[in-house]
Length: 373
Image 1 (cartoon, helix red, strand yellow):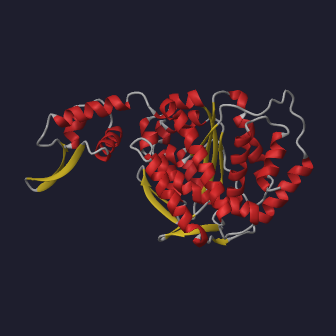
Image 2: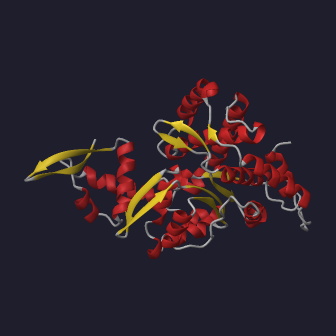
């Protein structure tokens, strides 16, 4: 049996969360143990198999939080994995990641977390977290007048949420701005069994899992994808043709990357190898295709954020009244949304080729005007 099967067997004995929640909790655990030790070279950067996972279900009877806690408790028994605090301020997050660039975040209720990120003292943190998804070697940014420098960041996130609460907490900017599409969304609407009374966990099975994680933690180096490039490329193109669309593109491009990450983790778990086989690739492709179908099944309910399409329609209507062009500042004065929300609407209209941008000389310096096609 592999670590995945052993973990599902161990956790499933005392937690009746859907097995897919245990499966992706296990992948998150393995990814946290690996950290930056394993990578692919993509262009001029290193690509790491870190995972941001969001477990979603209709109600609390699916025991998302318990599934998350099991993974956290297991990792806490390893001395070489940093478990980040659940509750933090913007400054506290920055300090944590500066002191411990690699680690594991857990968020029991992601909908509530999104609301916290909107508070004044947390402003800018969501954008900062979003930019750290790529696990940069070096990151520098000014935030509230302070220069932030981070090095060798690579963290995993395992979060959960009730479907309705998440829907009520999401803003269009969370999707269009790229924050939510960075998460691998695992949705379950049924579970396999019910455990009325939780028995104690098996210490022998836990010990075996910890021993295997210790073995996995010693694996390091560059991943060899050369043997499966052709097959991955063919699937990549066919996947884009099938699923690429205005509303799904942000998820589509991330899911293509997640296929690589999952293939790496499967290869390490099954064979303790960094040479990716067709077997690991095809298993990863199947996972991504299943996740895509599941995500599409809830996309209308989850991601059609109330008000956005009305905003888009109103912005387009205003721009169409100015065939010679209107500046963004003038447009902002005519619509009741903030500058950040307006920018997201503008980018969506540009991608849809409903408007265009032209540089026009006026006086001493040129300005950018938005014009209808």
